[in-house]
Image 1 (tube, rainbow, N blue to C red):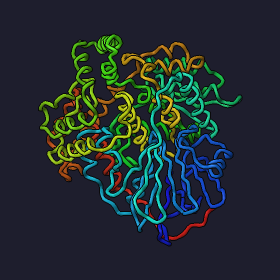
Image 2: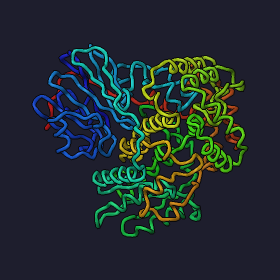
Image 3: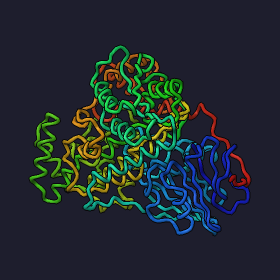
Image 4: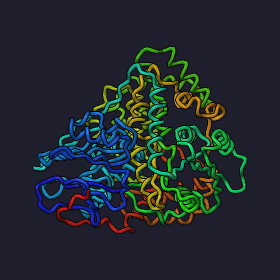
Length: 609
């Protein structure tokens, strides 16, 4: 699903080949479903909502007639952006706070071209890969502070999330204002989270008559499944899918999934998908579809795409929900302990530290010392420390951020990162420390979560692009802007202890979630499959790191990457940064270089009513 537009003085604006116009300067690719676009006009003002949104047509018309409120991008259920075309032919974009519907832009023809796909814009520019972004992905994967605003393509930039961005028809720099800020108040999180989640799944029930959902037996996907079942109209059912090892139907995950499905026998059709050796992790990495960036499900793409294709063929699924994002928005960062020290809440801090130590079966002393030390460390100072740790040779001391209660816990350069890669990542960390942070007034735990959620939400769009290859529309309701706003706008006094497991979600789903599932505090893992897949595919993986793009670009030390792979395949964990991001990057680069770039053309488009 790609949409975008050109804002500027050129009489022949660029647009994707084969697209259609829905507003004077906004176009859609041929694969955008009708339910993902809403338009309204009042005089020379045009409003376009791009992405699934719970607003009614009357709501959209009101935006055109009365103006756009600051919270328009998170006012309703869904993951969407709002585009406002003014009488002066400027375009004002309102981006969602979670970055679940990311927008990108590049300067072009004395104006700006913007789109929902970074790779599409790279095709317009014939842009190369941004080597600094690759370096950060190898050396410090998942650290959003190092890559904020950049993409994997040179001269293509991500627009700020939760912001208003004006693109002037006269050209010139972007005018940006941050609109969203977590607003901890005295409201009760539980009813607000319940309402947001129910609205999110209700929206999806309106998008498809063949709605499906993961039902893993864990709290996140099970909550979505039962919430959907509770809101479905009479006579409709939800197809809920549980994957399990072939020949084994006795696992805990499947047992809990069956309990949930049995609670709604007339609303949930429970479908089981046995996994064989053909769906092992790391299988088929040479056949991954091209996406805007490396997709989180890349290493599991054989299972991920296999499940979606099976669903499409078996019961014609077209819109599928996952529980992705639940772990992020409901996570309680260990930095909460530092916040408690800073607020002189010593008794609560000690209680949480001891509870966390018991849960992890570790000594409490280091946790207490980390909390006290981190209470004195600002985020900019932590970024400078991170820069030193990333540039230092692997295995050397990483400074004050080595503890678990830290902004960037345990970060140091992996042994396979080359010196140029480490230098680039360190430079990015130093630069980030000097940037103005609009969230500097937040407590440390909430500030940490803003980056965590945005990294997960943005990369989840790459998974959605993978799913599109199976002709399935992927949705992650936990990453809806309204859900994220509810989860993060919670007073620190209401936040649960660091050692608890999603008590607010269990409370929000009260009356819908079976008691046995609500009480669950663990989740099954796929570690055995992970190692089995790595062993099975080891020759291919060794070839990837030995003769892949990263080695040719001088960012990877192949011999050390091969040694790490063999160690992992033997079932021996590697401390620090995992080797998987290297494999994911290589698979993504192969896919990008092997797929044709999106084609562009020039000229005006007729708006289709």
